[in-house]
Length: 332
Image (tube, rainbow, N blue to C red):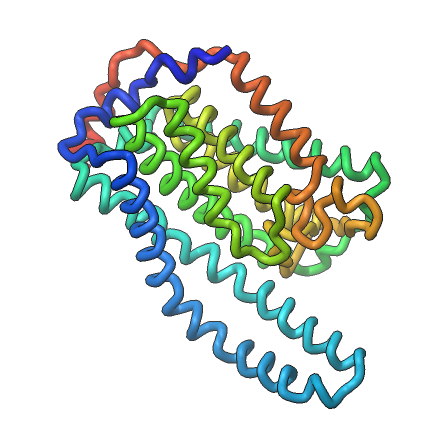
């Protein structure tokens, strides 16, 4: 069951050809630097976009002390609306995670794109399969929370928001790929050049969770669940010898959560959804409360079971030669 931590897949073997292999501690600091650089780059257009909402929120805050609870509630609604409206542009801007990770790997470590998981073989089928897996996993968590009586179903609420729904799907495609390329395609595989696969998997999963530690309504259990997702994503990447499948799982997980079931994504409200499920005030340990389902035991259950199933499955091409496409991608 634990052979995934002993037998290195071709993308990891290809990464060992890197010309620069920093020490574990140095690699962690490089990763943090790349993440911060991407965030600073993303913040410039986000600050411009958020200026109007910030002005509205400041006006509401200025009068909140002199008004009643209904007006304070209106102010909170303005802030939530701002967060929801800013989510879509943020998703598209996460392309900088991909850009910065690729620039570093290609220019500094001299790694090929193939070593980052950009495997051409079965890329399309891997992506479609990943979308289906992500959909089923999160749907299972919703079913658990609903059957436990901790979610309320309010029906279909999409209306005429189909184009906005499709825009969010495109945004989550970029965001899912961005976080996976940064944490798994670059960081995990680079760590494996100087460390064991098990240490690389655990380290990138913990840091992946810590990157979400400033999200709205975050607590201990949400961070545990995000780390568990990181472990699942790491094993999935190694088993499939590709970044495409897990990027799709990540995309479907977030899109289905917010834009299909109408549940907050890591504490962030969504602007449009197909269905509406509201967490009840009772059973927040299961439904995750304000953070969303990722903060509850329903998701913990699904992720633990998914990890166990994944560990029991055979990986792909663990002893295969690096394909010719690696050389083509290396010259890309």
